[in-house]
Length: 361
Ligand SMILES: C=CC1=C(C)c2cc3[nH]c(cc4nc(cc5[nH]c(cc1n2)c(C)c5CCC(=O)O)C(CCC(=O)O)=C4C)c(C)c3C=C
Ligand code: FES
Ligand SMILES: [Fe+2]
Image (tube, rainbow, N blue to C red; front, side, top):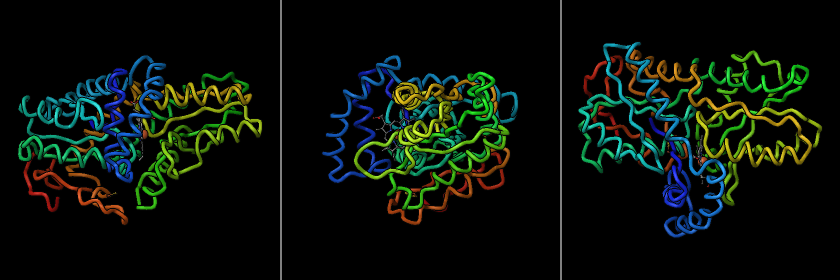
């Protein structure tokens, strides 16, 4: 289960930021080694305060473990012939790292592995970076031939995911009085991306829009809705409209009730608990938006735990090594590591562990 990760304690904030700003696959800076360190160190005190305000750390590992446990229990029942199922966590910027996961898998005698991104929608800066690093970790640990791999690289339109988002929106709308419910504007908010990444051809904006459209249909939403992007960092230009600006504009036109729906994260962390709930919440209230609320994150929502198991089970049944999209590099890509494959992959059309050499690396 691959994700960005987050600092579990306040002491981990600075090392987390140092790793993030050193990763050329999420952010490209001039003189990255020097400037990345400078930005991370300077940013750390402010970010430490934010994590302090949400309980002293990111809950992302706790949620991922709860999701993994529930997913594996369901998979053991759904697919006895591939049981037992075990999950390992591979975070990009905090422990457990890809190397930790691979070593633990080897120690447990695992031979068949599914690289399962926990970002529903693809971006080369998130899932792409995690996968590139996973394949590098195989080399670092000398475990190139230890596992036969397949990849779940995106699932933003999966029916179970879409249904769980729709039911989270229902719960979000239930927070309003009956007479207000129809007046609520549903504001889908996704993490933004630098425009440079989008111009390169990153699939993320289209995949976010596809998720929103499917969720709106599944929720049979009668409310108006919009999509905006949050969490921009640094002086580069980011994809808009920004969630913060949108809140100001909606407040200016007298919109009182706004339900924010995080569409690109599956569990709570700093962007929901701090940025939306505290920062945007205070902004909205100061502008007279009395009904500013957020739909709950999926976390351990039953429909979502079912969805995770269903995504993996469907993947195993399909026998697909990865999605068709996976091999489509961004037209503007200059990173030779992108869309690589490990040396041992499952063969197209089989759900078993037959081995085939990867076509390219
Ligand atoms: C879909 C998810 C995400 C995308 C896309 C994404 C892009 C992206 N992020 C940064 C820089 C930072 N992100 C930070 C935190 C953070 N980012 C995501 C997800 C996506 N990022 C999550 C889930 C988290 C929170 C981790 C947690 O609390 O558990 C941070 C650290 C916080 C801060 O300093 O504000 C930075 C920095 C860039 C540059 C980027 C673009 C490609
Ligand atoms: S940046 Fe998208 S494939 Fe390399
Ligand atoms: Fe981020």
